[in-house]
Length: 185
Image 1 (spheres, rainbow, N blue to C red):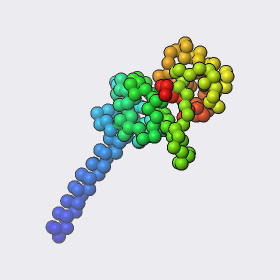
Image 2: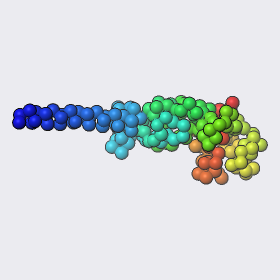
Image 3: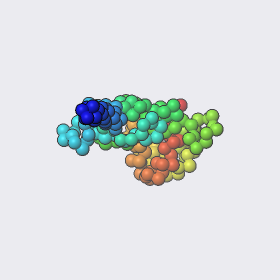
């Protein structure tokens, strides 16, 4: 009888230890691997912020990072970018200061598994109006608005900044996000 009681106690202890280990691993993944951060909701001192990473990221999702962290810090917490992630489309040193969302575009078309050619892209920081118009998502008016925005505000820091250009909403951004870069080829 004592053997059964001892076995149940030992199994309970093993179960509790194993469950707490699984919970710690789960929390590390949710926090982007940075166990020193706290949840944005729970943090009243506002030293952390949530960042959503989508696209060619090893583990897409929302991560909590310290304000002042770089985009690269957040991406490393998410396991990095996939081999198909286009590094010309984001600024590794972009400093995170508020809630942000970042999309990492692919180099190759995910829809066409047989392709060996990279997606043809246009650099939104250096392209002329006619080069921008080569993208079906940009009309003459929108291409001109991109040039005007860039002249007034400087280079785009992230491709998501295109949404700040008059005439570019979420639908247009979805059409062009895989075909633009921040840096010239």
